[in-house]
Image (cartoon, rainbow, N blue to C red; front, side, top):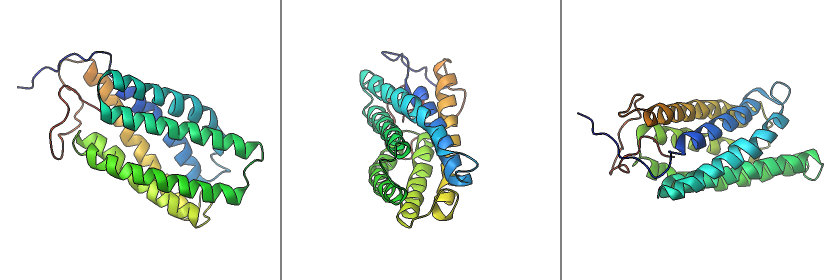
Length: 210
């Protein structure tokens, strides 16, 4: 029989952080997968700043209150990532960053975040399968995108397009983890399965962390 989970100091912010990450990743990945004419990149701007950025960063700060170092680090970092993407888009719109400079800049940024994501992927394996799947698909997405941008691929072409498709999958996996966190947090026992840790022990009482 499953044990009831102890109450957290505050409501679990992980589902919010995962949802914010998922939606913003979905919109940007649509641009990478289908190209600028089908999914204009400017559609990302507001959501990168206020949802994927501010809301996810806030979720990370609330995770500090829950003494969840993994969630605080992940949400705080990727909240900052989306705030940075939003500012970069503003620079593009105002003509401060040229197209060639943008692809090279994105290549370095995505490479840096792929390095960060590599060790977070390893530690995610101690949370549960759902969270591990988020970081695994994100790892593949970032690797494809930084190689594609260094190669000069435009959205909708080459490795950037493939990275966009994998990014859409990443968003769907993150939405599932978010949905599981919401319904499991509303119930005395888990409703949507998130799987067991691949190794080690998950933090007690947490259904979804990221």
